[in-house]
Image 1 (cartoon, one colour):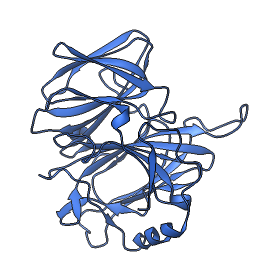
Image 2 (cartoon, one colour):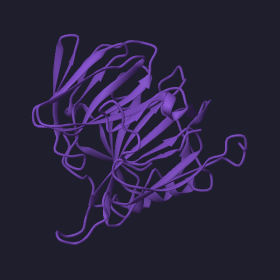
Image 3 (cartoon, one colour):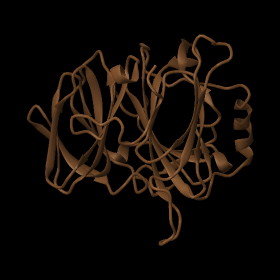
Image 4 (tube, helix red, strand yellow):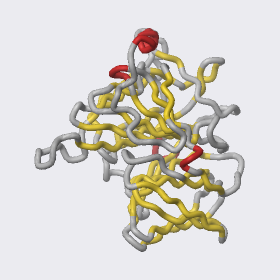
Length: 305
């Protein structure tokens, strides 16, 4: 198994800031790339056997596939709004151009079917407020199974106010059953400092991610407890994962990318029984008043789960 914590700047290739492929991760399906484009710059590449999304993290761009171009309005940053996005099928060549420059992500998955190139509007992204109290977070479900069709790929964004616990209670999705899907997962992080202007801050912010194994599955040990910063990635091939902890001095964003061998595209999880009971306490707690982070095209609904 490869190193599961991938620090920012350590996995760039072919003009990309970050390249995680199924081969580099040592698994079968999930991948992610990120790309910084200077004003007026263009980047062209092929998807190969992967389907992918073009999701602006900051800035806007145009995406061209086989002579058809989609304009993505994007956003100023991940803490500032929901973004529109484009879907690009496997066995495609795409060109991404940004007049003003920006940073763009490409969540991907090894795909069997080639689905058509198409646009995902920001207005169609379901936004929910999940959890309550210090477990409150905002989830932008832009490419979850009920929101947008893909072959294998599942992706969402989670934004967590400083000091809160996210991806909690710890959960897993690493086997096939009536209550669980077998899905590899990538976490990509960004942070926003909350300190007043002029106060020193940690470059890249600070958060923490935990992943640990199941005592009933000694053949697949895993143990991750990492400090993560902007641009870092954590790979989760299996095991309980959570919490993702936002330092009180930094708001935390992460992009989740999931895919696996399941014939049904679904996100089914099991909670660690030692922690899952905490969900019952959320019904008596208010959602963190700092949420939602911004007004959303579809609104944001509290979901106590």
